[in-house]
Length: 187
Image (tube, rainbow, N blue to C red; front, side, top):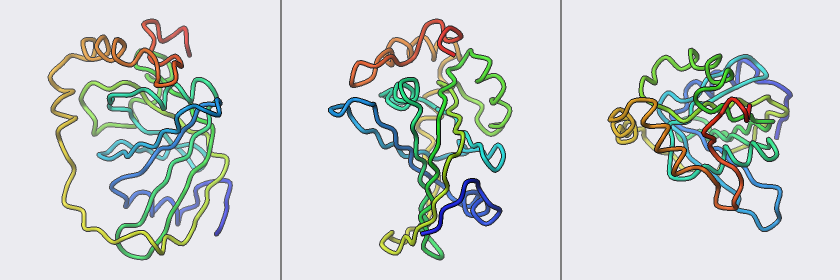
């Protein structure tokens, strides 16, 4: 295992080759639900060597946003599914920037390939980058991205999309605050 305090060029190249990554967060409560979510498409951006972000296309739950609002802890994991084995984890403090906030507006240009309504952007201030062997991760061939979520989001305007998301994602599984009607107040 190797540990760094930033993304070096070698790790940056690895990240840029990956088609998916995983996001993990948890509430402070001992009986709260840990959340792990897979992410794909062109949703990830390296902002610099100590900051990364991903655009949140939406989903049925709001755990990541809620956990970050409560405590900020986040881990992103990239796995080599082809080539040399490797697991790369990025630990840090995350901020959930809901659509309509200054933080969202500042980061939105970093995702030019995503042109459908989205919920927000998750920004991570890196505290630790960890490389581990990945010897037990299986090999897979990438077939292609699924376009179901993109097509679904494209059916609505950004405003109509957010109205529905705020209604459905107002609280997390554990009752933590999720999306807000007045997102600027939460940022």
